[in-house]
Length: 583
Image (cartoon, rainbow, N blue to C red; front, side):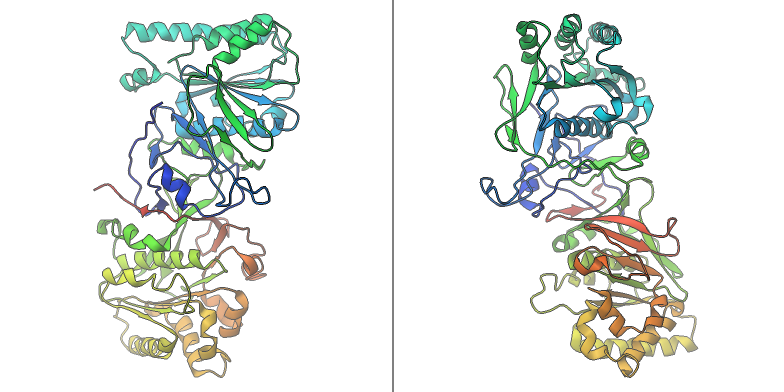
């Protein structure tokens, strides 16, 4: 089986993780003990693009623990690599214990296919055993344009529908023959203006409702689907006794790739003919049953032309993506073209993620030349905070004059792994000043001099940004804010600076430390407020910002927020990052 992966370009300012290879996927993703349904994975490869071709493999899940798989006390998940063959269907063997999980897995495959193809290229027929909403809870909110039929398996319409599908396969084979083409991919490449759709046939709890006639019709259809774009995905309920001969069932299963559960939590893939090996013959998954409310909108937007889907970053949910990797920031930023940004003396926009719903916009905040235009970041997720600050400072530099100045107080403890992560910025502006705790007084005094000078000469338009990382480590210098001269100077910078083009970006691991250093009344000086997940951050900024922060998420409040609090998802990958790789 060959894998087809198309290279594509990543849109400027969309900071997305790119994984080098399938090997890198396994090596670089940190430990995690949950796989969410929403993380729908692509086939192996760096980037795939929505196109007129199905992926050869659908990858669901990931290696999520470095612990030995035989250690039953510690989770060890192995991803499913489900092959999409033009000649074979997929059959999941179900019992009472795994029925829900298998149902979820079938639906994840459908959603993954929907996110891989342009919308006009997918038609779905579902055969449900009892209640459609119960059998396919993830699919019920999808736009009805994707569905050709929803058939109750015990109805007389089963035979009629299978007959129609069989005739469609015969007709399309005649079209291929007439045009001297071999398969649906070749057809769609030639007739790209009027492509032929892939048809997904989803059958729940076979053989329920199928009599011998309809079972033979399904067998005939399976024997004729090769290269026609018809893919059959079904579950076989082993608790239901077949109402017809074992020979019919054996022939049917011989044309399918079987997925069945071994002892324990592992599933195995098996070719019934025994003549094909798989990339991984066994896998285990922890699929949750959560589904985003606006799934229909998400699928629609994923199907916008030229929408790019990146391996191990795309999610089927309404959040924003922010990739995180402080070690490779220099590789990321060196690849952004200068013409991506325009110098603006009055304001600059900082993009911190890709908006999956509105593909043309990213979530952003704005530094404006007016009061309160500062940034506060609070949360124990230090790595994410550092990366947000790196991404922000880089974009501010690119939108500022060369004469602009950037003061960064890097207040990490000696053993902090992120220390030195701002050094790469010196390549983009000569006026980058990076200091430690001992430099606080000097940096603040220099900025106070700028404030006094600019108050007299308002024509100065050069931007100045003061960044303090791990503000809580400055408490010895700044505590007793009302009596500390240095603390009073910082308050002055926060209140008077923005109107003069002097902005502050402060990061504290917890709100208590921030409150001890910054007078409560000065909280209003931060119109851009970001909260990150982790530990105590679930309670930070309570009654001031947001009451609850979920693991793995950040919240942004700023004047242009449509909904008040913009939500973005934080990803941590030890992998190569790149943007605008179009040379």
